[in-house]
Length: 171
Image (cartoon, rainbow, N blue to C red; front, side, top):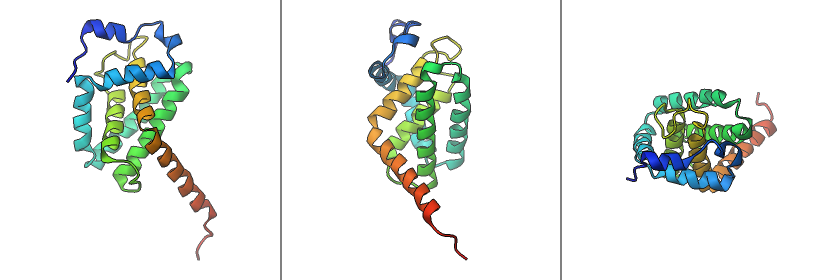
């Protein structure tokens, strides 16, 4: 496991990053975070949690509540909302057994990213001005690396909604 020391943490993000990060740079920084010992602990936990729906649903609920803390960060709030809400819905559908279009590995990686997002223990404490950037970087990395499965999930959701709307009421 790769451990990020204090010097590397300082290089990971600066206050100037708040205004200057592109999706590509966020993705690269998210990859670095995904290689840390902390994320790997969350990943191991997420594999175990996938078999415990109630625990997963609590984490998913916390992740949606956590989004409200980032409302003031307008530049990133729409991306962050999209990533968290989509990953939350996808993991929930997977755990409930409604959706099987994602691999267990990618469900666990997504859940681990959401655990990281809600955890008070991460590389950059959330109370700092730039504390949300590590969360956003990791979520961006997960979202971009599994975009195919995530887009398939969104299509499945859209298809499911369409079918529900088109079916005539039964008597």
